[in-house]
Length: 126
Image 1 (cartoon, one colour):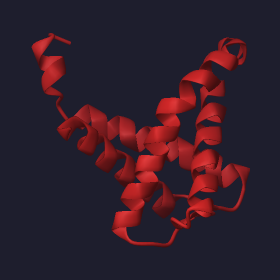
Image 2 (tube, rainbow, N blue to C red):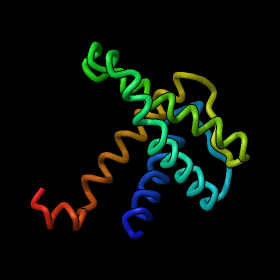
Image 3 (cartoon, helix red, strand yellow):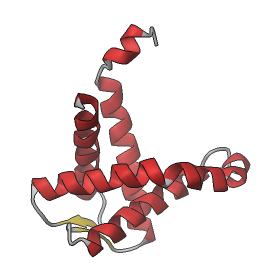
């Protein structure tokens, strides 16, 4: 449960950073609804990402992995769309704002995950 909450907060911080850094990616709402947006983003990543990666595998191989950025953009677009439906406050002005937002979210969450030590990784010697 603690691990889930840490991932939720990491996603929320990454989304907040993207909103602060990327013009065209906007968030209007409370910190609580930002956590809900992060939860939606996490669920979208858990359910849709594996299928998209499988379906776009030839493009990912052909572009030496760069197409994963497009997949991340699609996942963030889906999160923005669901946020609009549920009135959570996350909006985007277009593809490039969403693309750059997905890039910032990937970088920020990767850096934060590197800084946070995972007890399970230490036990298994990774």
